Image 1 (cartoon, helix red, strand yellow):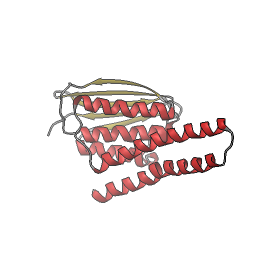
Image 2 (cartoon, rainbow, N blue to C red; image 1 turned 90 degrees about the vertical axis):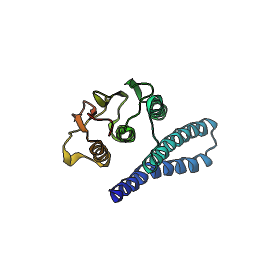
Image 3 (spheres, rainbow, N blue to C red; image 1 turned 180 degrees about the horizontal axis):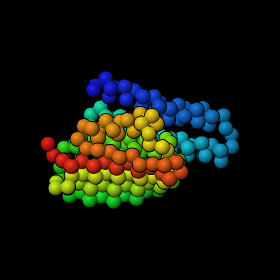
Image 4 (tube, rainbow, N blue to C red; image 1 turned 30 degrees about the vertical axis):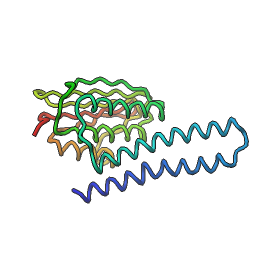
Length: 201
């Protein structure tokens, strides 16, 4: 399991954070040769957005290596922070509805957050979506439910089409004893739905 996790982190660092930092380097070099103030400001604005994205990607790696215990309001705040960053960097609007007791604690907060982050990463990289809807409910009696829906290009959700991100989502769901449904069609967006019946060990 450790080797599998390390491999996932290595791929994410290569395909995500390293690519973003490389883009920042290219734009920085380009800016040094510009003389038009308007063009310089435009490049600096794009560099700022890429830096915001790299910070978000770095936090995701930290979460993978040493995940904090996230409960109640703090859990909701973390999700809102990530959605706000995507809105700022990628211009993707969002709707977020949550039903979580204010001071609740639950055993699978880290896995739920990881699934949320993987889904958002997939949306940024592949979906070309302009809007995301997120619904999260956690209750001792009914368990947990996380639904992430986008209005992007969609795809055929066959196992042969599952890339690293979806495979990671399935792996994290397996750790919780829960189930994940991937619903999508070309041109009709994608929905990721996680259900966990038991949220405490």
